[in-house]
Length: 226
Image (cartoon, rainbow, N blue to C red; front, side):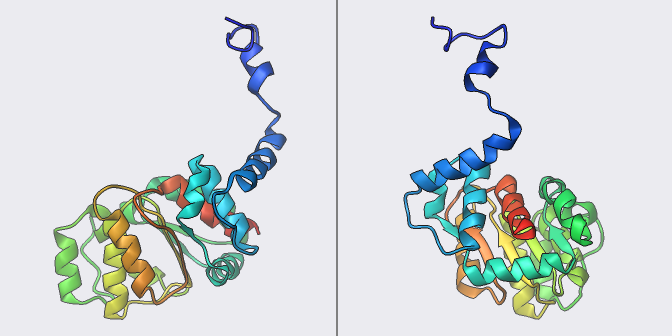
């Protein structure tokens, strides 16, 4: 076993580690070099790269949907300190320290999942469907009073995205932008395709089954820091 392959006495860190301020620039440079597709114009390219960085997967760039207009809409809203409504605590934790710099308040659907279902511009049929769905779907509907002009972030629960789309079709308050990257093998791809086909607001997503909370948080933070 060579020294490069072994560990101990600091060998692993000296061989493979980098100072913290070098890791992100090098990662983004490698992602640009290894991107399997042409990157979109800025600022969308920076957001797409941060999403792929969070996933550790250059191939994710094939499926990232981050239109310039959607990135700019999220950027404007976040810099104005609008509410940020998240599906799960992991997403909320991932964005809070960044978006709160601009005065945004972060709301999490999991925190209100046990409350009676909101009827704020949401049809009885949608509420009935949510009643037998996930806690995250119900919690997101309970935050509908905060959706108007907000940035909605769904990184984990496809059912939350489906409930959001149903509620928006009912006439619920319209967000400034939607970041939706739920991952999974049940309803995730379908929910995101439905978003792409019917969304009444600018959106950022990842087609297919990939995505996740870290990818969603990375997209929001990139927009906030642009």
